[in-house]
Amino acid sequence: MRILGIDPGFGRCGWAILEIAGSKAEAIDYGCIETGLKLAPEKRLERVYAEISRIIKKYKPEVLAIEELFFGTNTKTALAVGQARGVVLLAASQYSLETSVYNPLQVKIALTGYGKAEKAQVGQMVKILLKLKEMPKLDDTTDALAVALTHASSSKINKLSR
Image (cartoon, rainbow, N blue to C red; front, side, top):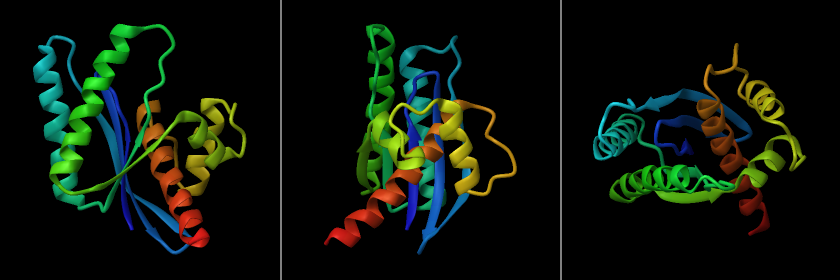
């Protein structure tokens, strides 16, 4: 199974492609789509959409695993990230990808077994599970890898429960 993991964002949108074969997970590629502050909002969204579409065409994932939005009080940021998340979901729909959504608590539990794990703990587990030589430079990329790993483990559990 090939998974596209997404940590949605307006300024930075983390992405990861994982290949799952049995109990092995391999990071095929990963990165972060960055949009410039000087671009108009619609151009920033267009960039996220175009890059996600390019990634889908290139790697042909079967499923999109995306992190649910969680924001405390910053409504402006939440709205912008929600718009970016929307264009990611649109691209996934246009390429007929099955979509699964995971909240931060689910990701932390899936990777560390502890719902209040720190970002650094989640990052270390990503590095260990995927046998990465080094941590990705941006948290957004690490989060996308973590969401994809969460889907990999969740889909195994779902298959066993059937």
